[in-house]
Every structure is written in structure tokens, then in C-alpha cells.
Image 1: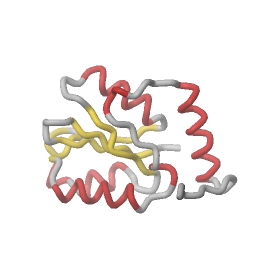
Image 2: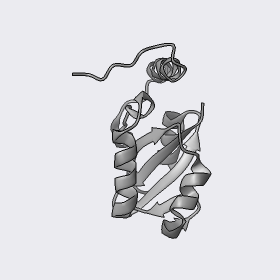
Image 3: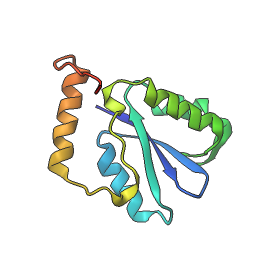
Image 4: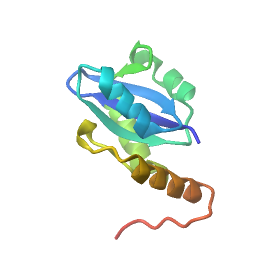
Amino acid sequence: MTYVYFVEAVGAGLIKIGKSTNVLKRFRSLTTGCPHELKLLGCCDYHTESDLHARFKHLRTRGEWFKATQLLREFITNEIASSGPSVQLRIQGSKVPYRPSYFRKIDAVLKQVHEGRTVFEEPQ
């Protein structure tokens, strides 16, 4: 399954809209080559990357990076808040330890939820 993700370059005023089948692995690779602290804002599986690039083309700075305007931030916040379980996992910067086996389990559970094989209940 391919996810669209939103990554902020903290302090640079930029947000990357990208896609990946393994968002956490992609996030880790981005943090390696970036001079800014990165923050994974969230991801979703019901928009295509190209649709979002077209929607926010007026904010594009270069490649997949867009100006972090209030409009884009509100869109991301609303999408994450109103989304299903596939975007409930949020990682703040690169300070979170990367445990591949743990995230493989989360991906497997999210896939089952997406396919309707598991019921997702919001925490109380």
C-alpha cells in the first residue's frame, strides 16, 4: 500500500508532500541528508501525491517541497483529524527510536484494518 506523507522542515517554513510504501523508512532516509530537523506530520492512503501537488501548486518551492502556509497546515491537520487508523501513527522528529520489527507489526495491523479484516476502535 502506498501512503502520501507530510514532512515539515522545522524552522525552514517548508512541508514535503511525498509518497512511499514504507513511510517510516522514507522518513529516516530524509533525516539523514537534511540540514533541518524534520517532523513527520502524518500520512494518508486516500489521496494521491499528484493530486495534492496539483492542489497546492501555488505553494510549491521546489520538487515536492511546499511553503508551510496556514492553508496547507490546516489541510494536513483536518485530514489527519478526520482520517482513519492509517494516519494515527505520528512520529515527532528523528528522536523516536527506529525499531523495524515494531513498525512492521504496526503496518501489518493497519493493512488488516484497511482491508476490513480487523476492527479499529478509537481509544476512550
